Image (cartoon, rainbow, N blue to C red; front, side):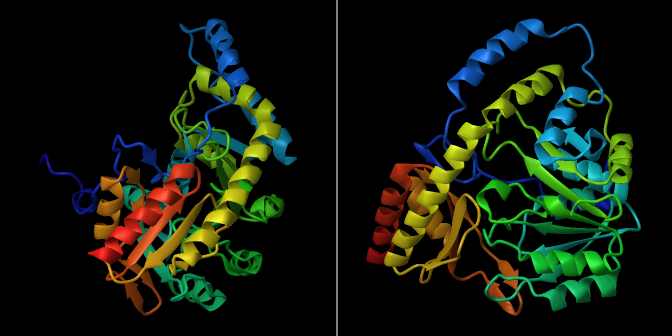
Length: 358
């Protein structure tokens, strides 16, 4: 009687090592500290909060600020503790027992994880051997499974590839439920699904402040969608889930978007430089539209390269067992290298050189 549900018992939790090393690159955080002026503002914000009172349950001012940023109505915005909680609210409202949730693998693992926690059945489409997604596969999955929720990640995590706009438009034409486009890395890409959000389109676009505003520790994410979707998310979410300090701190942070854009430009420039350097090492490199780069070095298992880099003080992410088309990538090294630390590439070069020498 003390056993969890079968779905929970069959699952494992989210695993991303937190190791104290000089260079941590495995969770794609911003490499920059927050603006110093924002940090100074936080000291004043603390003294203005009525700590003995519950926060604004609707996060009214924060939603208004985000809505202004995107040119939408506040009623089209829902804010939560990171984009994972946004995804959880979506799946609580539109997933659940007896419903299907579609993903296209490889992609961000938390879609399937959270969907299964809600009791939904996860159906997986497959990307091509080059990790791109074909419209025919989108059509097959939707027509065969009739999912209540379909996820696209743009740019895709963990590949870094930008999803072509025509893929989303094709999906929206045949969608049997809502379509969620996760734009955690949107600022590094060349197009956004945000412009397609409309009252008569079942599209929800999620964003996070972790990657560009240097706020990963604060955990703030949001979704822009039709008002009828937002109303259901508000029902699914817990009351008072977004604390007063977080609301005020995020509003203050949004006044530093010019600095954010400068940092994004720097990261994109570094991305180009590092991609070139990796190719000079004769590695297979995927073109990235995010703040990380996926590459493959043949001849060594991913776990060995991961450990060699860790031994040299570099923590990055290994991706083992990618399934894409008929190609199962589990005997070659596939790595994610987030952009952000000037010493990271040097250590990477040393680590790969060491691997080739043993």
